[in-house]
Image (cartoon, rainbow, N blue to C red; front, top):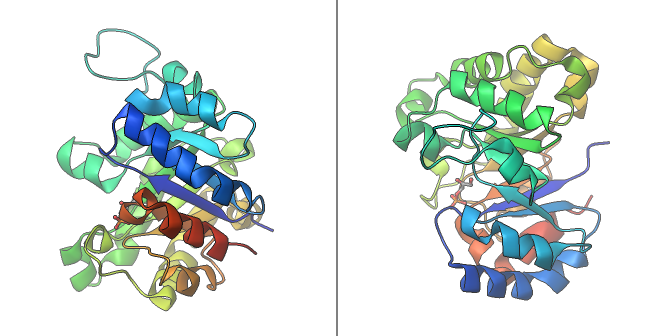
Amino acid sequence: MRKPFVAGNWKMNKTVAQASMLVQELLLGLQAVPEVERVLCPPFTSLMILSAQLANTGVGLGAQNLHWEASGAYTGEIAPQMVKEFCGYVIIGHSERRAFFAESDETVNKKLKAALALGLIPIVCIGETLSEYETGKTGEVVKRQVLLGFKEIDTAIASQIVVAYEPIWAIGTGKASTGEDANAVLKDHIRPALANLFGSAVAQGIRILYGGSVTAANAEEFFHQSEVDGALVGGASLKPSEFIKIVEAARP
Ligand code: 13P
């Protein structure tokens, strides 16, 4: 049994004061759903204060990125140990980072290894562009992202990884995939690619999320699918009642 998992990716939103207020609005509702692993991923600047606010609540905290080196001359970057000071989770390889900050399957692989080495739970994002989708390349693209991004990961720790399938054309567009289509990508391409690397028993234990215009209105459609273990939520994670409803919908 894979425990349902819902993470809110706040992206570049909320000052420290605003983030702290949003957590206050979310906390009771999220605490009432312990059957779901739920994680908030605010900007770096709010991690310290939110780690105190979320201590002993059962609600997890994640960063949106990390660098793979332990320290050094990397202006503007955050080292894995700095993330680990406050967080249990980290998002890796979000499509916005791949598109705007030159991240690649190779850098995703380095970041993934660095996160796992410290015991952080990585939420690794994969997904195809609109043109890849329209030309029927989805399967090929997500398989490549898994094979290269997850290269040389020890099978013994691979089950720690959470995968987020986020078709880029569905992110922030209000045009979500359908439950059935997303499930087919997970079932026909992503889990088989994981099985190729780690064997089918380990692949069966790895949680795979859907992301892209998830709302309280469509969440159930995804969570009812056999392969979808939860969601990575952007815009709707900034609205307290909406996000709480999504987490509730993920109850097994
Ligand atoms: P939206 O939910 O705003 O479409 O964003 C999805 C996403 O990118 C989560 O990482």
